[in-house]
Length: 381
Image 1 (tube, helix red, strand yellow):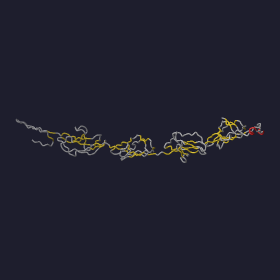
Image 2 (tube, rainbow, N blue to C red; image 1 turned 135 degrees about the horizontal axis):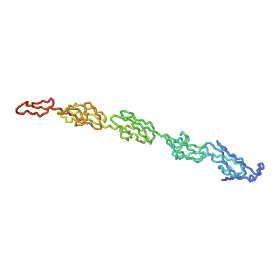
Image 3 (cartoon, rainbow, N blue to C red; image 1 turned 60 degrees about the horizontal axis):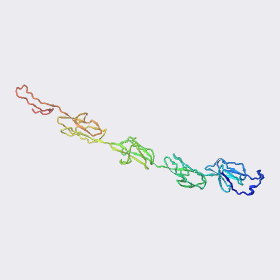
Image 4 (cartoon, rainbow, N blue to C red; image 1 turned 180 degrees about the vertical axis):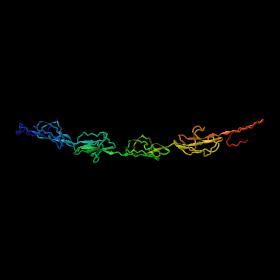
């Protein structure tokens, strides 16, 4: 692209002779480059002198830069109005020296400020002082573990001006870096409660959880026990009417601290009954206790003086027919998973007969006694 410097040159300037220039009477003009506060690199140097209507190829600097800015071309008033030309463009020389001044543009850069994922937005525009800048939201899904995105701020520590999606600010004299503003998410704890335990210790969870986090319910690592009860999980309420979590189950953390109470279910209990098993007198003992599986049952004696005609009390047996083990007073029987019945064991007493002998009689018959007598019985002759 060729830019024509549309200057109104005096007729004499176009055709003036200047023998001192050694150019056959034509005036020659210089092109000078101004770095305009550049902080590194070199501005171009053009040692040529140009006649009016000569073409000038605009040059680029060598590593030309200014901290906090981007190069936006060269500013010139050669045409009478301020305009920007870029390296590689072609100018047509007018009737005066030309100064090309570096045009430095401001930028807006977005910094994730420690983000653990996602990408900050990119603004490819360049700005000058007074331009309006519209702040984006978080299109790249920036995230930071343990924090929530809360907009953009001019300082990484969250101090100073801050902006949210759609806010507009006026560009100042310097480029701007906007840092993601993070607010720390609140965290909550889980506490385990023994809920009347008689031994062991509750598990401890040292982790702080954000709302919505998945939490694995802890096992009974401290051997928590309660006499007469079995641990049936962890409940949200002391009376066990809330939701019950099993060890290893996953729960969703609410936006509040949580107490999980041990849920206890009463162990099943069993009774012991004594049967006279055909007794004809006395009473069987009574055991009013309730036993859990595995408890030892101490066998009673015969405090109620059970008797059975023709028999002798010989202890207690699990079988009414007297088969199997026989238990004496003070013996221990482990309780099983059902009620226990102990039957009196009777042994038949030995009996004797009375026989009459005629001892050589020569007539008649001796009496016959068909009865059976136990030791100590009275025999009527």
